Image (cartoon, rainbow, N blue to C red; front, side, top):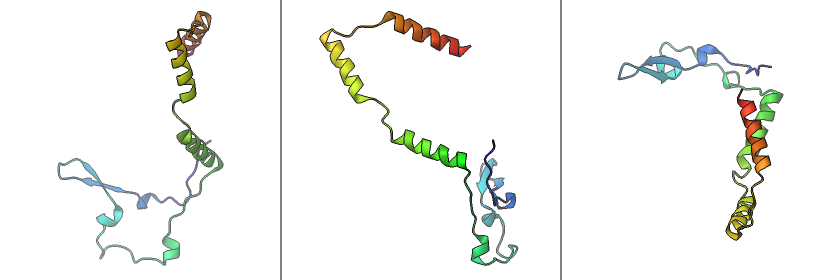
Length: 109
């Protein structure tokens, strides 16, 4: 399902030009046109750009915000494992490790 942006006009986009090194350089359209060749300005109400976000786009933004706010590391679990390793009580379940490796390998195919 594609997300659509309404009110986009390709002529309002950034026009390419050559930079000092001969490579492409982005220049806004307003910088390309001289004031003498530019069209007369319309009333401010009709020149305002608008963007309408679809439901999926809003849901994706909320999800992105939630992920950004969540901690990268579970500090309580790290502290617990560190303590267990230092005490010599940390035990590795070889069967669980083997199962996870097999799940990972099957996902690569």
